[in-house]
Picture 1 (cartoon, rainbow, N blue to C red):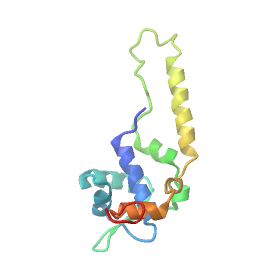
Picture 2 (cartoon, rainbow, N blue to C red):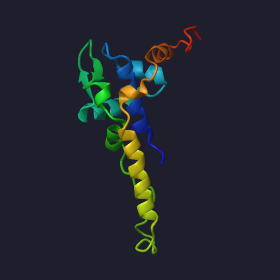
Picture 3 (tube, rainbow, N blue to C red):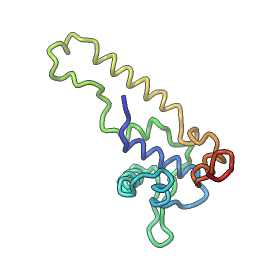
Amino acid sequence: MRLTRYTDYSLRVLIHLALHDDRICSIAEIARTYDVSQNHLMKVVNALAHEGFIETLRGRRGGMRLARAAADITVGEVVRRTEEGFQLADCSGCALSPACGLTGVLQQGVQAMLAVFDTYTIADLVTDKATMLRMASGQSPIGIGI
């Protein structure tokens, strides 16, 4: 299974906000950090706000921040809310599907993957905050400018 770009960007936004939990962040800042389109991020941010992962603040000093602690947001929850579906194969038109075990095996695999994702939080993804902050600001991981 391959996660969509939408889910990838959702996780990146949440990681960025977890890294910068001491301040408000902007879409432009996150787009620069990850070198992604602001237009794509606007859709992602709107959905994350709608789902209650982040809160947005309007106005001149506006931006966004996590709506709850990074340790309270599981990767599995984010993936479930950002992916359209988890059907790995379209067995609906297959003549063998009533007697075939493939569908069950694929469903079991998806459930196992989601169970693993449920054991990790956004906070768990911020493994080395100091290094990640340096890298996000354009510095090399060892603190020497690139």
